[in-house]
Amino acid sequence: MQPIHIGQFTDSFPPIINGVSTFVSEHHAELLACGLAAHVFTFGYTSHTDLDANIWRSPGLPLGTSQFRMGWRLKAEAQHAVTTLDVLHAHEAIDIGHVAAVMARQHLRPLIFTNHTRHDLYVQNYPRLVQPLLLRFVSQNISRFVRNSTLTTAPSQDSVRWLKSLAPDAADRIRVVRNGIRLDAFDRPPDRALRATLGIPEERTLFIYVGRVTPEKNLMAFAEALIRAVNSGADAHWMIIGDGQSSAALEAKAAPIRSRVSFLGAMPRAQIQQYLAMADVFATTSFSEVNPVSVIEAMACGKPYLGLCAAWWDEFADESNPEPAGILTGNDPRELAAAIQRLCADRGLHERMGARAKCLSRRFDIRVVTAQWIEIYREVIEANHQNRPTA
Image (cartoon, rainbow, N blue to C red; front, side):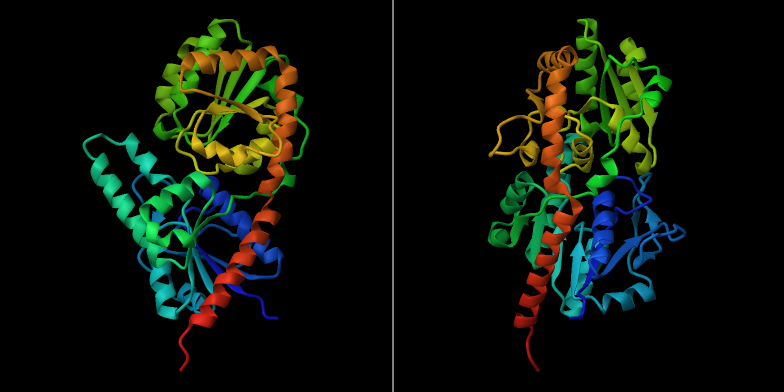
């Protein structure tokens, strides 16, 4: 049997570091390992050296000051590679997603769309005056793309509900497929020497955050709660890996307990594993996630989570086993501070939760997730062959 040919279209791909980039690159590598003819199409970073095969980088321009690149058309070699595909898989609805949609129609191929972002929540971080306009643009663009796709997926039930509200007439073509990563890369013992080098006492409870330091991540909420907890006697330390437009403001907010906070900035993903391994608790106070890879990575390291109640956390629950893998609180700095104090006072608690988190992380193994995707690809390809008009 000839291998099926799959093309992923994305604006998030290494050297860009984010959750979508991580998933797409690891999914691509697993597809290749399974013997499929997998391709990735993206814009920009044409001088970047790719370790995996079939990465097609077409020239692109910077999108503002971000890491993202945008373009209008694929280079000739990439366009030829598209003609060999059996299915096109777009990971965004604009720019390269639009390119994928046009080429899917042109070559009569099925198009799968995966929506990774709750854009309706992100627009709330813009000035109130422009929020209605942005929300209308996002809603119209996403709903149109959903309707024009053969199948739409999102990594969480919460996001699927939102997509179905935008395109109720296409609800039967929208489903959940979670993100996945290589879990074995995070199965490592903590480096105690590294913790000592950073000046963090062994007995101190180390909370860690990995990701962008931007308004939508709501890190100010954790900073406020941590200040309250430390001032009440909690033996806590907070480590932030990542940077962004809120970095300076967050450092200023944490100034009263500066000795208890480490800002390490952005770093290559391969280095993050050692910091996760030596931490005690992964903390994030974001409301706008979908199925964040950073949380999956921390759970794979056996770290419990601490966060604010939000619908996206449902993907990290297990109805068959009510034992929690972390603590979620209301959006109240006093309640969050109390949870920080509780975790600092009871090491056994976060060790038990960490063991549960590690167990739950198995559902996000890239081998499991890619196997699901292969079945989906075969499903839409077969349906496309059956529905294709005959001469």
